[in-house]
Amino acid sequence: MSQFVKIYPENPNPKQIESVVSVLKKGGLIIYPTDTVYGLGCDITNTKAMERIARIKGIKLEKANWSFVCADLSNLSDYAR
Image (tube, rainbow, N blue to C red; front, side, top):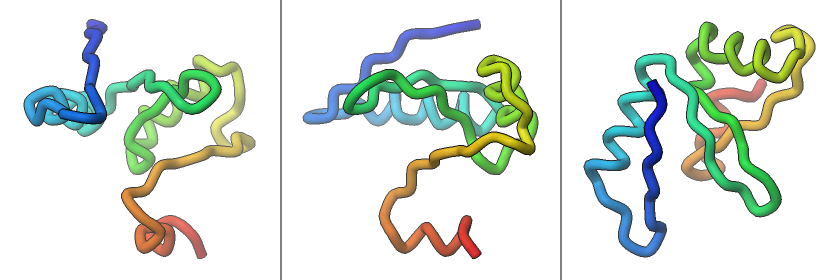
């Protein structure tokens, strides 16, 4: 099931944020705007969600170059060696 949720950066609605977080925690995918195009996102720790994105993009999961979003630079050490 798809759902459109518009989140206003100036005044985000906490219930809408919770709704998106719930989708991500359940392995769902989101589409979000970037500065140039729309991005397709998921929980980076959910392998099945990552596989879904790879399948949608027509790429092999093992060969993909992924971008990810962090709250701040201190989170990088959680994902980088």
